[in-house]
Length: 179
Image (cartoon, rainbow, N blue to C red):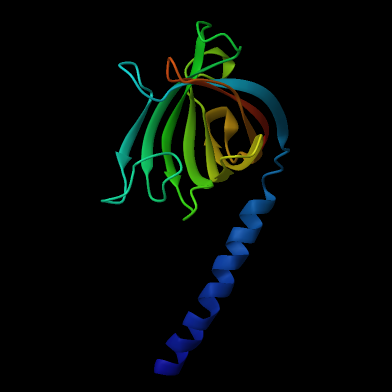
């Protein structure tokens, strides 16, 4: 009796794969390409800070160029350069200085759309960001709502840093493929 049940179990993975393949053929999705430019309005200190130090290595300075320093972020995002323009999204997530020399950050950011036709949708950005580079590329690794199964690239460029007001303006050019 045992050999029959073993033979049945060896056929099970084949049947599962057959069902998965057959069901995937039923959908004929076409990717949509969306291009947009967004502006992260970032305040890295002061009473209205949108970036705050979460943790770091004890005994080391906790700074953007110090290995292990981790930040939590909740930046307003606008469609124009003007920091007083209407907010269309929030940039929420974590930055971590991830190289011993402090040159790289690991970026984990959700762009959470709060208005316009993308309201309620998200884009997930993840990757290594070379802090000293003029333009930093990170991956778009997913999304929700309108941006289901999103992927491709986000290019980040710091346009302005005002140390007197602790303000930074970061342009984000997105090319996104999604369903």
